[in-house]
Amino acid sequence: MTEPFGARLRAAMDALGPLCVGIDPHPTLLASWGLSDDVKGLEAFSQTVVEALADRVAVIKPQSAFYERFGSQGIAVLESTIRQLRSAGALVLLDVKRGDIGSTAAAYADAYLDPASPLCADAITVSPYLGFGSLRPIVEKAQQNGLGAVVLALTSNPEGAAVQRAVAADGRTVAQTVIDEISQVNAGVTPLGDVGVVIGATVGPTGHNLINLNGPILAPGLGAQGGRADDLRLVFGDAVRNVLPSWSREVLGAGPDVAALRSAAERARDACASAIAVTA
Ligand SMILES: O=c1ccn([C@@H]2O[C@H](COP(=O)(O)O)[C@@H](O)[C@H]2O)c(=O)[nH]1
Image 1 (cartoon, rainbow, N blue to C red):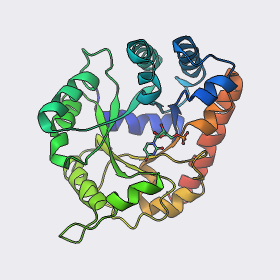
Image 2: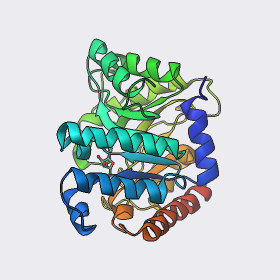
Image 3: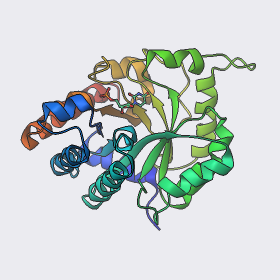
Image 4: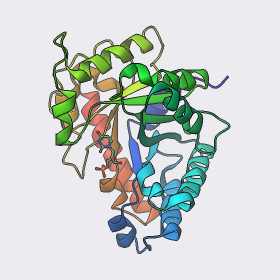
């Protein structure tokens, strides 16, 4: 049996530092890397990131949308990128933000969290807006296979607050209800639960209770969206030790030179590690 995702993530963050780098092959980045905005460019971009970072960064997060742009050929590149990253030892968090009624969520679980699937990752991002309970098939499949799920809670984009900070009948925000459901799933798991949350580094002090979460906190929004490593303490307070800071465009902008990509990732990691160490 594979070691659970939470344990593998904790070990990777302890060994390599708190850093997730996204693979987001935006058309503008393809152009700045001298690549064409087509499947060949997508493939070259992805392979360069694999070569530069797969064995040096705790988590790599391919953004599915940039592969889906190219239809089935783009998905084939995504499959191959996931395979290469995992063979090189990286933990792959596929940013695909899936969620649906339970019976369809089960099919998404088969697609992304079944080792027999060519798109199987170590974890995926999921959306709880059809109700956290609708994600059960995904959570269960992840746990059966030593994999994980990371659930949107307080996203980094300003538009998210209107839904996520809305207050439910019991006085909790929608985001807090998601956090509390995950706390129950992760209760008693050591060293870290397999189900995490997304809370953007841009949201300011969360004002949410993360004390019982016992799971990873993916923090996107650093760099291009204006979040800074120094904000992590302010945003996450005592929960900062379980934060996985995530950078895409700011690090990728250093490419296509492999050494420059590695240096950019190291700078991001070191900045986050210092910010986290202050309160650890
Ligand atoms: O709340 C969220 C959830 C996911 N993302 C994703 O992370 C990257 C951010 O890219 P940057 O270039 O570092 O801005 C992107 O794939 C988003 O879809 C997020 O930004 N916020």
